[in-house]
Image (tube, rainbow, N blue to C red; front, side, top):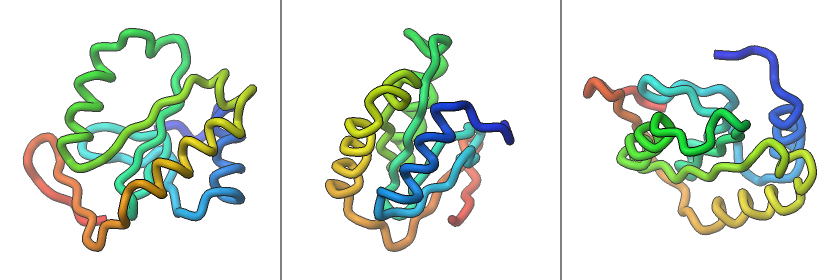
Length: 117
């Protein structure tokens, strides 16, 4: 888990806190994975990607498992956040609006155990 935010993460964190009507956690572990931003209430994960994520098999496996736990994942390139933040925020807002709040969010680990959030 990284303590220091990238420039794109810092910008998105600022906007999420001030412009998005939902609570997100940063660098949040879910199972054996760490997600950039998670909103448990709407079961939404926001990932910011650099060039290392192009055609990543690891990301496909990770995303499939997270979706199996009831999460929606939306991904943005770091450059999108830095240069088109209004579009990114609109996409996040739309995703939240289209996902009803969960009353009892639970997440299972890949090994089968569960952790309440």
